[in-house]
Length: 153
Image (cartoon, rainbow, N blue to C red):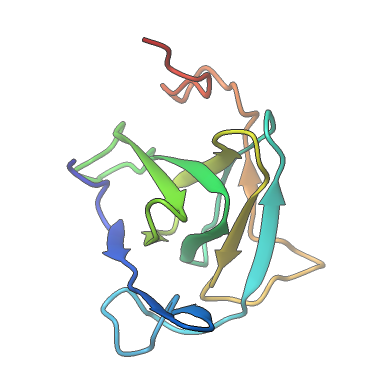
């Protein structure tokens, strides 16, 4: 798949032993790392779509640590070589990846399957409670050429 300009994907390595497993989610020596702002977890119940939004000031780094999430990105940026492109990723236990989401790229996610998805994000900036760096559209906004429905067939 061709990625939206600035999007990076890293396969994460699961290290199992007799006690369980360990997985590094983001390291400062990886090329995806810019700077640390904060870390947080967000969840999504089956049948719910958390979309669309973008940030002007921060880059996000998403990984799914429980369940399976369908993450969609849309590039509306003027001057971008991938303007108008959509990317779709499945993140979670079956596909442990980190997705770097550049500034000004719309993104959203939903739980794929019948269990809650838990996303951990490492944004490059702290959340500003007084002036959030979030710009939103409805999940079904017609300006974004993406449908969240399950593709049967």
